Length: 279
Image 1 (cartoon, helix red, strand yellow):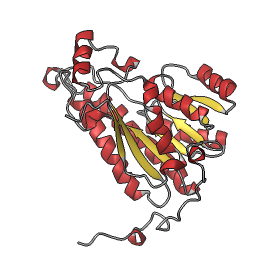
Image 2 (tube, helix red, strand yellow):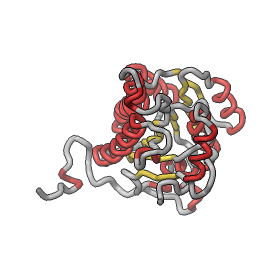
Image 3 (cartoon, rainbow, N blue to C red):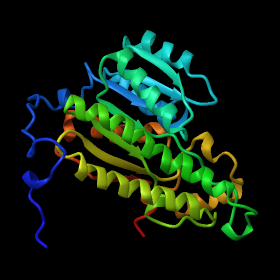
């Protein structure tokens, strides 16, 4: 069966999309001034590093949190970088709550140009056959995959109405490889699905939005504090760069995908893992 042309897609709006009007200076392409960015799981770790980077680039920023209040961090962004910022409490595994939160962000800021679906949970239960029941599996899928889906569906409606938007998923190198020595089949499967969801939505939403994902490797955040130091040392022995990353070493990738420097980039997964998945 022949591959359909862009103009043969139905229900997505007019295709092909017109070429954007790009700033002549490359630094201006990376600017987020005048844009509104929303980042789930942004009270700490990767999400917070991305939120601060976006504020530094000029974006107004909506922070998301669940158990750790982020009001003070929103205040910090406003006072430090002169942007609008507000924190929103939301259970990332609750579809209705996510939709209400995104609608509130849109109402508060008057636009929503960038959505980073970053919130996630780590698998801490060990080998699958040693887990007594299915609760831990469902928790990982609910947070790491379903939460991304719910966020996408809610923000996609706004992007389609606006006619533009950039959606970025935090996936993982674990969606490409199987980690060792820790056993985490549920996490690996969820992150692999996130990568493919981004590619699928990039095609579905080509008329009005770009969708990409970032696959971090081992990052020095609280998410991995539960891991035994000997196992973390084993990780580092497998990383060609020989260390875990500072979350700030990821923000350039998220800035690229959010900005006009990547207007022809969609359906892309960028691996930032210190070379772990190369061998």
